[in-house]
Image (cartoon, one colour):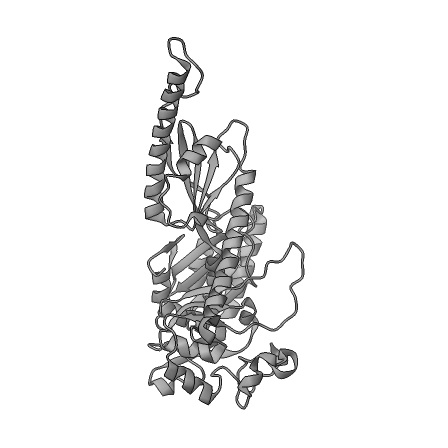
Length: 427
């Protein structure tokens, strides 16, 4: 994942901006809503005041106003924008379709806030759409949640004598065979183009629409090791008078299912081997991050609302629970979610947010944030398991009985990953 382009923001870019503390201004706000010019000016004036209140330098305020003052590359409403600015330069920026995931943020700090960005990236999927017909196909790529659909290639095959209607001078069987051969050649060209895009773009899902027979021919020629990545949509989106309703619905449902499955798989893998393959709770996940051992980390978005902090270190191991002195490196106290996310990025781990699937206008349940979990790159050894059992669970609060960890009531006893001395009512 480190070298993958994510619609204008690379994980490598985040490693660069998160490497050392500096004076950063982070903005995460709603995108343009098609307002009249006067309303846009009022919105930008309000943002200017918020930036000034946050302590953003004048150079940062100017470049943010310039970057957000036009609708040029912004998706249609609703949308959201994220920018990380330093010394009057936009070092990283992204636009997203759909509503914000969490509150607006206009802040200044030692590091840019990346949790809002990562929440969107966690739900994004790269897809390839193949709209096929007897004479060719239209191939499009899309970063779901980020940018508009883009036509990557149009394949124009043979069109003569392809309708399977008998022509004068031809036997019926001969004409049928000829039409079938032309049809197969066309779909072979489509498959070649699609397979090249699959190799180059590595889409998470491939959607195939169009003529039923053409779809059947094409799918068999796609070079995909996991057939579940292919979603056949029973719609002919290239036919006259058709629209993309069925295709868009299939994309939304498939992408949502894929996101949920990623979380389920991560939790299952973390729990495998009697806990040998995973870490649970802030302290245990921090320990795994310090070892560069985390492959995937899952965070509850509610953690972003907590006032707890961890130490972001200027070099390896990148994160500490309470003191940088133990590692002989400089450290800065930051929000726990940001510290965990930064350490994950700096060690090449994937960050997922377990977003709640709420219906429109449905209120979010009132509960405590679930503890972070991690999938380990390599399992704990027998010696590590024995030492862990002897010392007690690393993520438990001081004095807690490890046998009672899963039976505690977070409303009365505090969250198991809560910092020592923290008041659970402050969450």
